[in-house]
Length: 341
Image (cartoon, rainbow, N blue to C red; front, side, top):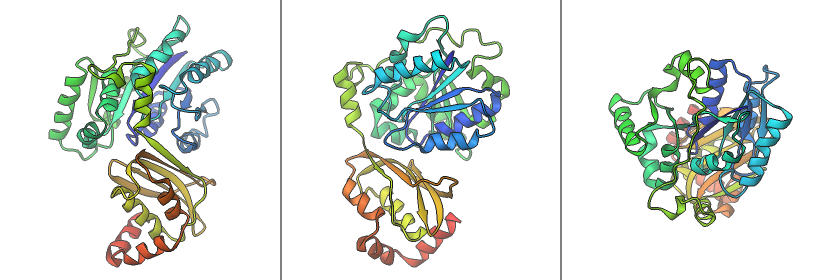
């Protein structure tokens, strides 16, 4: 069994990248999703997109973070997949707040002749690289430093100057990584196949050693450092909402961007509004709202110093939400709602 780690910060586009990887390589892997919080939104997305592929299985690991708090359960789950399903490929998508160095270390005891680790990949948005490095430098540096391949996402309209600048910054952190300096959709089929160890890539599954951060206790690999890193983020999960129109959802997401509920790093969910299920995604200071085939309402919010009470009050209706909608400038509100549809 060959294991491919696809890491990346919250909202970087890991799930979308994995869907493209499966499409371009024609492989039929087992996919392990490490969801942050009590939700399975990414798992549902992968299942919906691979529904025609009977031999692609998506496994959920929602007991905790695979890099620290639940590392033993994670390792046992990987071994169970190997012993019971024996797939040719296992793709692991860690939560965006997981440290790649810890995940690699957690897999080491199981790497032997029949189980190998392919070159880990990290997916990142060059437009938001500097801001993410500023806000969460240790976590972001750890992911970049331990990746063998750095993949750019969400950069179809990014200038060449920015792409080159971010590539140089990544090279300072990880001089040995392969940096894909443009959107991954431009890459050849041969490159996609190489990610899975196919073609002329005999060294793709060579021994990989984790590189902890230098000069920082929180990256030293000890349990106290891991716990401190985990404490940087909190999450709020909600399974019931009472929004009456798309405008309320737009205003809520606008307030998330303005840190009314704390420092919001990522928000995603499905909500029923006026008889239609909508999905929202917020990351990198942007958000999008689309229709969703899901039938279950579930939302998750990840960040620092989140005010769970305020989030629940707004999503479950109330006078405050209605009052804020009325105060929102009608011209902006109309434009925002039109953007949804």
